[in-house]
Every structure is written in structure tokens, then in C-alpha cells.
Image (cartoon, rainbow, N blue to C red; front, side):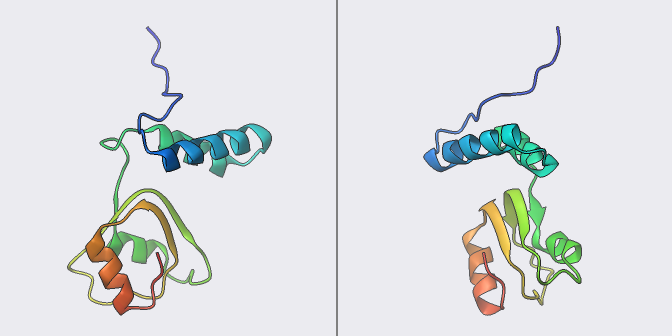
Length: 109
């Protein structure tokens, strides 16, 4: 029995379905590895889709203030992070507390 990867999104969310249609088209029509990875992560279940804490996101985005952080998953709030630099984040989900923390700083979600 060969293990096959999932070829559909299990979510009934219409926005996820539209994202799957878009990235399926982009992965097929372009040679970008980024589009294939995003499509693969959109197919993942919520349990297997990795989350990223705000502290790790800040450490990954050091010296990259002009870049946009794209995360197919959840950005979780980290109480240990006292100062959040100006970030631009595009993620599937972020908790309400993170939105409040970003409103105190120059971060955009």
C-alpha cells in the first residue's frame, strides 16, 4: 500500500477552497516551488498543520523588515515576547490576542 498525499482540502471553509483553486492553478502553470508547498500545506488537516509562535516569527524575520511573512497555519501569541518589531504577516489564522498585540505595535496582519 503506497501512502498518497491528500489531493483536496478537508475544510468546508469557502475561502480555503478558493485558495486551493488558486494555488492548484499556480502550481500547475508556474515552476515555482513556493506554490507547490503552499498547496501541500493547504491540504493538511488542522492537527498536522504546524503553528508558529510570535517569538519564532520575530527571530525568522530579523533584518527582513521589507519582506512579508507568509504562513500557512496559525500564528500563536507568545507572552514572553515583550517587544514586537514592525512585521507584515499573512497567515490563515491568528488569535484575537495577537491582533490586539499587533495593534499596540507597528505590526500588520
